[in-house]
Amino acid sequence: MQYMQTSTKSVQEIVDAIKEISPSYKFGVLHVHNIQETLKSKGFEFPNDCQVLDICNPNVAMQFLSEDITLAAIMPCKIAVYTQEGKTTIALNSLAQLVDDINPDLIDLAQDTQETLLEMIEKVK
Image (cartoon, rainbow, N blue to C red; front, side, top):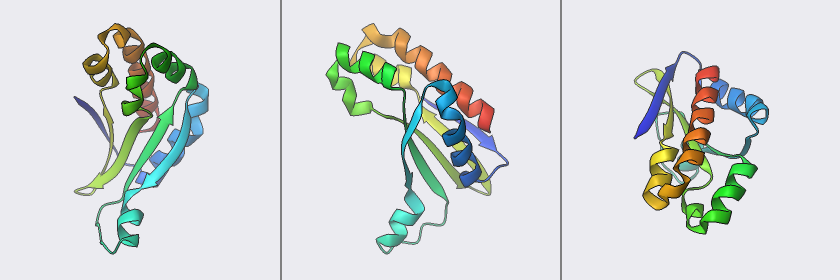
């Protein structure tokens, strides 16, 4: 499952807003991948602005990894922000579903974390 919100703001405005508010939610933005620029550097012209944020709450990461290190394969969480058909979209894959597929015992922590990420997205859109 994927959660998607649209916004009238630009991709960069959304990315900057997430970076600004994430500490107040105890998250940090580890890296921002600018897909359009990366493809351009490889000789491809991609028409859509597209950035992907690697975002992490270290406390949650420690809990996940201490219980099941295989969860490292889905970390950090990713929030994609892109333009399509003239609209800015913010997308988040369901963390609860991803964790449930690997270790259902950690679904409550995943659900709580996902709710926080969705609250952040709602605030910046």
